[in-house]
Image 1: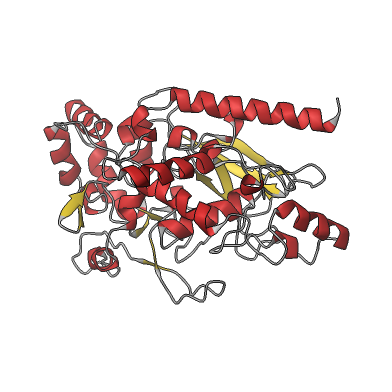
Image 2: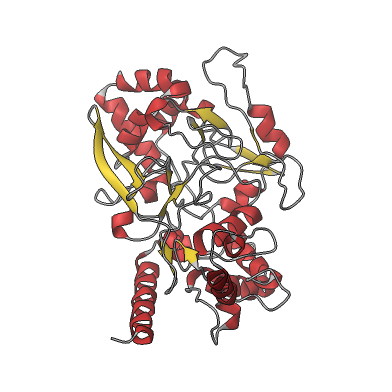
Length: 413
């Protein structure tokens, strides 16, 4: 079969998979919030299109949507966030990436796919392991088993705009890095190093499993650059400038970028802002009208709510993400050796619990924690260590009825 025909078939299959993903998604994950005006809904629809539909390599007739690669993990946002939900394990498709140490020869993230004529940097490999009775996976890059990696599952997208609006001062106020109150919990703000590329001074991180991105815009820009190889005004993949590339491959890389001569971006500011508006316009997860009261009391009694803060102020209102957006030591069981932003390998940002019910309602396809190792809420709790050790010990001592109440409450978020 000729290559163009093969590429056309692959793209058709990907489009079909994406459409199927949208059809199977919870409608709440795909609809805009009620605060958008009619004019904003038009721009929101444009952003939705550039978020959901596949990007292609340049040159292409769809010049607004070219610039993919040449190295990438997925060809659209929706590929890693099916139906705007969380990602999937690698045996099922895109949605889990391997972050790499800052001094890695492959850059900060493994790109396991490439355009025709280029070679992928490597393939994701994993081995099933057991930690006591808990299932886990040891991820590596195939044929490079000594390279340190940190597996990261793509999170659900709903609610990210609300998290973007929480005040830095509030997040810092919740921190207790020296555990002065003696409760064994010492969350600290993720203070990021100065960004040489943007010229920005130190900022407070809040997005990503390690809180390595300070804003929703920069999180999206990172995803375009690292996941799809698409440069924006905020973030460049820089792969075409790699001095290890032969000159001819550098030239081919530049042609594949899709940027116009003299430009160094592959997605225009207008389209990037439309994508940003799309994320900002998504509805936020809402709990059931009457969350299980006994389970909610247990969340506080176990001190889980010390990190998974139920309510965060947002101007004159409040949101209920169940997170403090701080970094916490989560123990050796969840640790790896890859530091990122202001976080060490054993530190993770408190994962928001809103939407947990939707993410865990399919017993055959539940993927929780940063690498999707937990298949149930119960397993995810038992993996907690470090600052959460005392809470987990108390959790293990709950009666069967209390366990049921707590899990039922979490499933209603």
